[in-house]
Length: 206
Image (tube, rainbow, N blue to C red; front, side):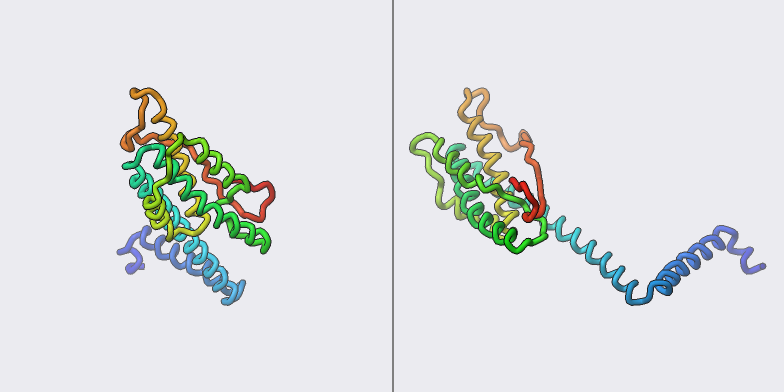
């Protein structure tokens, strides 16, 4: 009794809480078997690793988007928009083919889904540019270099968001000077729905 008294009731409660907590773990392992417990812990580790991979991919996508927009900022808005469209188009063609292959295999992975009409929409956008406006070939290569380390669906999706931004900048440049191109520091945001789903699901769209 003298031994417990010097630690007080709080220490005693902490001691028994730890003992009881350990007994729950031991009890679970005993009831379900060491093999099942190991499977449970492996599943938990897998969830953590998957979450960390998603977070790393998200940050890599944001960095690539920022780098692409910053690089295009030095070009005329029409040229920047044309260049972004050509980059998205190249990535869209590759990703659309891979997506169809995933559908054929019934691949269950969640990805950024591209619609079958997206490449045609980019053709229309390029055709609507003022006469004499052409994409910058060197800039195209630079953007592809920026996006090369992302998975195919993410690379296309980042290019898609850059096109949306550059389209807005181009439309703003066609307005009167007082409503001209927004500076990057204004932190103007364009809502883009970040939908990610399985390509095998019905009614897919970008």
